[in-house]
Length: 300
Image (cartoon, rainbow, N blue to C red; front, side, top):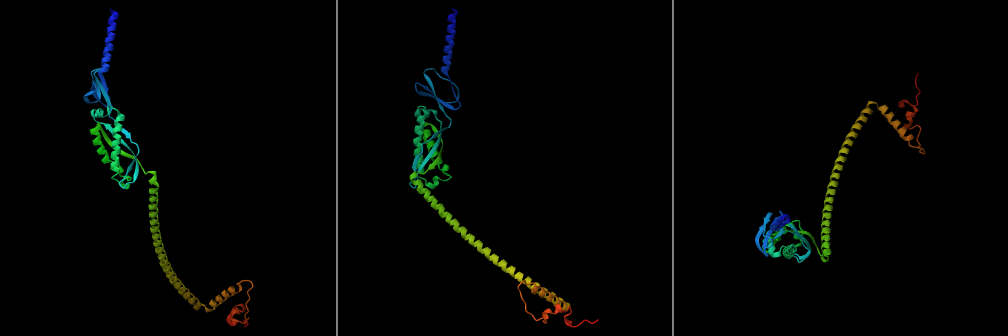
């Protein structure tokens, strides 16, 4: 009796545990769920928390509602000028309607990606076909993606129950067959701009140099004029001083000039020769300290 009762208790506990494990389920905060009965949806958009279901007949499908990233393959698009560009982009998307998502993809994320990617490619192809190359490579190209993002978001919500949050371009390259031509054109344009800047710089340099030369000539003329004026004033003042000195002591002034003449003549250097009459005026201060009494005997 005891053993049978123990077996019944154990069996009852096992049945209760099985019933609880198959009747209770938890939806995580990052998830949403739908409840199915034999494959038919009977409860939509189940929120996070602890929930109850009927074992065996009812099943639960959970979906990740976090923001997911679809890294698309690089594609070749034609611009408005019929120039080819290679565009590498990515898409941020999120499940917002679990019921529609399950009906369109059976909850398979890979199936959702296969449905989203062609739509993104088509939208970008149409958008790039309306833009020229300058607009595509400009700093505002992210703003140009707002249109495709809104269009894809509306379409994907209706078709598969996901929101397209953002479409961004990672890289834009030119095909190899046109890259060299574009680079050559860019190089030619930069060289032309460089020549223009050099010409403008040379013109400015010549203008500055001409102005500097003109100012130099003006300053030199003013300086020469001032120098000549000062030199004339100095010469006049020196002449006045010489005149005053000569009038103050004429004989001493003559004597001083003779000494300067002796110094200049006899200090001219070796090998110089002068032929003079000894009785000439040049030697009178060498013969007597008194040139007026030269040749007379002193009285005493």
